[in-house]
Amino acid sequence: LGNVSHELKTPIFNIQGYILTLLEGALEDKEINRKYLLRTEKSVERMISIVEDLESISHLETNVEKIKFEQFDVVATCGAVLDALEDKAKKNAVSIIFDKEYAPIFVQADEQKISQVLTNLLVNSIKYGNQNGISKVRFFDMNDVVLVEVSDDGIGIQEPHLARLCERFYRVDDSRSREKGGTGLGLSIVKHIIESHQQTLNIRSTVGVGSTFSFTLKKEE
Ligand code: ADP
Image (cartoon, rainbow, N blue to C red; front, side, top):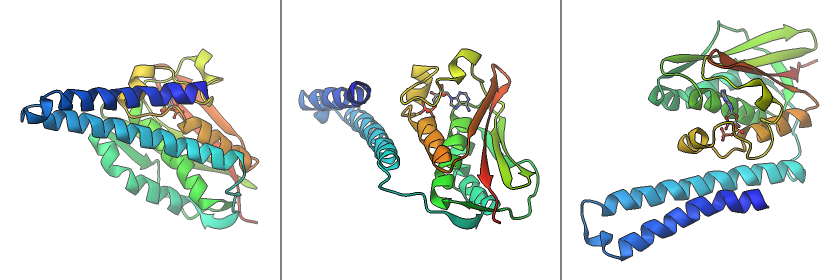
């Protein structure tokens, strides 16, 4: 609770500051009134992201949304996520691609939640990627499971942080995360979803070289 109130306090006080400045006269100043309203909007967006991520965690923890096992083609699901993130990737000068063309791979999992996992991992690879970097998605067939791997050639993560990365609100670099609109909750949601599928999430990283996040999914029988 302490972390949550701390995280929400920053945008709330920012919004209050902008509104007070507008009330104290900036509202009539055409040069800056729009700037302050845009900043207010950014802080509101930040609060919405935090609350939405908290809601996802709370739903996962209280089992409100049970994992719905269904059969689907994980390659197609991933393709849809890549398409949805294309603009965001372009804006950050990062390419997100499959390493090669894949035939359909059918898995038994919750499609909407796996889509969220792929989105969170790919958004991170964009946020923590380098200019003109490439993020790749790979699939490895391992008999009864498929290994899904999201790797980037970005800033990387120092070894001591790896064990704590999936803790709520844990960030390696606070300012970079906030500047990029991160809530500090993305990876804890990813880990939760993968573990509720009785699978595991693996993280490997080398500073300056890049990071690889991988998880397994049960293949359709
Ligand atoms: P955030 O919203 O801060 O991105 P996450 O839970 O998604 O929160 O990630 C936690 C932290 O892990 C991030 O703040 C960042 O420091 C680090 N991180 C996550 N993904 C990557 C990546 N692909 N490359 C480098 N660092 C990463």
